[in-house]
Length: 180
Image (cartoon, rainbow, N blue to C red; front, top):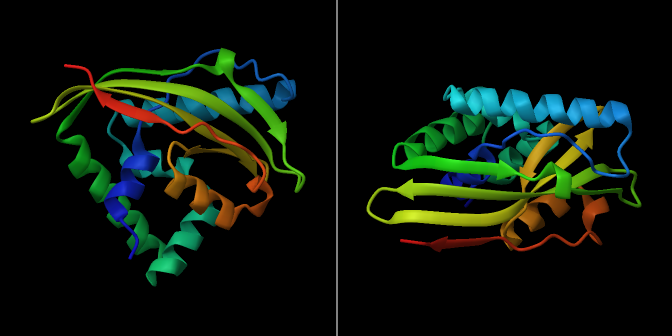
């Protein structure tokens, strides 16, 4: 069974904007990626989790829904509610996406992407201060940019099931640790 809470958390953390400098992206791709990240940030700051979930590629949502045996809208609604519930116990203190340090490329299948180092500092109820360092995959699909967390093996396996062109792309494994 799909762990909706883990998927919602993976899809739902905020991304901060900054100047894109991934070297293999065109000027138009840089501008479109910047706009995508800014729209995501705005939605996250305003607790618009339905809009936040639009960062996930439709192909990925369809795949997860099919695997879970539910309609896409049912899955999406569940992910939105799970994200809202999870965020009730979390205060994001800092979030930074280092676009200046992003690496970019094109898979053998023609998928245009950027891997963006991402760091999060948050306060979690009954846990304390937590710091995470991971990566976010910016993926261009059907002419639009989408954002996917790729900080653990389950997320990478899901990505590769939907986008087999990423089979040979290496992703840094993220870390999450209590700091206080």
